[in-house]
Length: 189
Image (cartoon, rainbow, N blue to C red; front, side):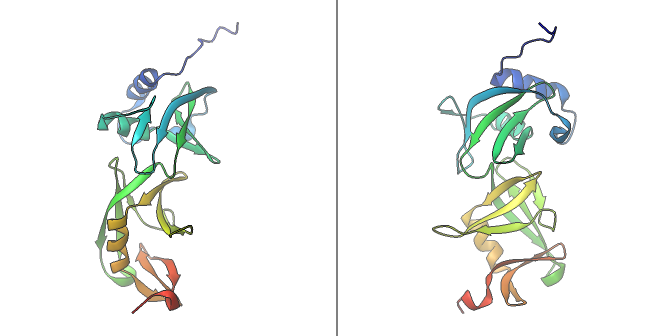
């Protein structure tokens, strides 16, 4: 053996490792590159519900803790600590944007979304809004490091109410950047 302690991934072990490293703010998961330890039976549903072994995780603080150590690599999602990396399943996006606030007007406007786990993200060139096409357009906002939030319906409608036409597009301004949602000619009335 190499003398290294063999780590068996578990929800409790991951939670304990994160609590021991967390002082304030988000843990520096971008700096952690531990070995892959396997997959955990955890999935994040489209509505933002976290499921462990077929049952919802009902403790909001536990969900917030796990969301703080979420990392995306390519199309895969992991919970990462300094000593282990475990795979989880994400049905759509790992977060849901459940509220939007607006300050300022027109090109000076700043939009801030709040996610279901309490993250706040200011829409900007670094945290853009995108509209994915499918059976119906689905809006997303970048939260951090490749992790997106699907914008819920009420927040999307509130955002659209703030929309303007610019260079042939209907969209919104935030932090000096324009985010086109659809061509102006497709907007009714």
